[in-house]
Length: 375
Image 1 (cartoon, rainbow, N blue to C red):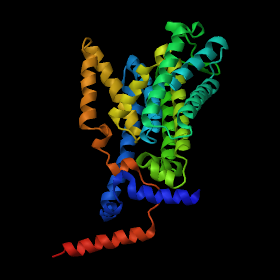
Image 2 (image 1 turned 30 degrees about the vertical axis):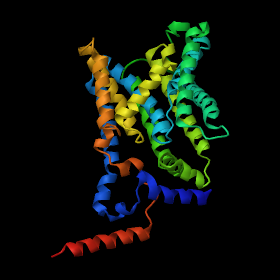
Image 3 (image 1 turned 60 degrees about the vertical axis):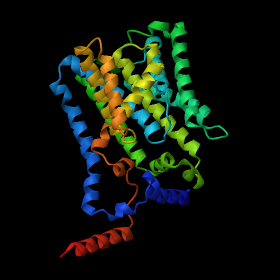
């Protein structure tokens, strides 16, 4: 296994992005150092803006911002699945909505609203549904095609939507209203700054865990899988198993987001598991930029913020304006808005320390360039 991982590390270094790593060695050390600092700066700016937002926003905007942060967590789950494993899931809302329904039933039928019970329960529900659907779609005898997985997840989301609408126990078309507030002891989380900072804290923790995951040895295998699945399979990896694992993790994160969303909104309805919400999260990641994590967060914030502003000022035609904006971004910046500040090398990421021999060769090459440039 370790030999396979080492081999994968070499192939990812050489082949990610479809070009050899030699041009990277020829770049000056200062240029590489500057490039590596862009992503942490973007993440830091987004975090600071999120921390001060409730101090600057009115109460109703804080409630809206809380919803956006939850949707950013949902977008993070899809970016793991598509941006890092190349799985186009049109059924991500299935895990999001099923967890929402699950915690709503716990609150309605069993009077369970404790945060330390409902959030883990929602996460497990999302994980379970993702394992079941991922096992069916990804772990067959033959590798699954992108179209097969896309249509399979789309069908699962549509079927869940029809089931929720027709099942009286789940409230049918009306869903489950008046969900009791989430609690810690005797304290109830209501809409406002407390709920906002709770959700933001959860997003930061999940983001850091995801960042650690995609920069780990497992993330290295995912990077190779995304760039050249056949080559990774050649080195002994079971590509479909890797896809199933990250698909299940994405489902767990979506389930966590769905649990928070249900308690924040106070009700759940069939659209939460349907195709519309599944497509919505795809647009978040497309708009912000896939395969970066922070791009998914930025995409959710911008799309929801622009939608809110347009619907308030252009009530009759705002969906058309939003659709045109999304189309322009996808046409002219296919890598998303994050590509304005993030280069391809940093999007892919660096795995492990560069060998000392390579660093010495780089220094020698830099000195040689300086001598050649000297008059």
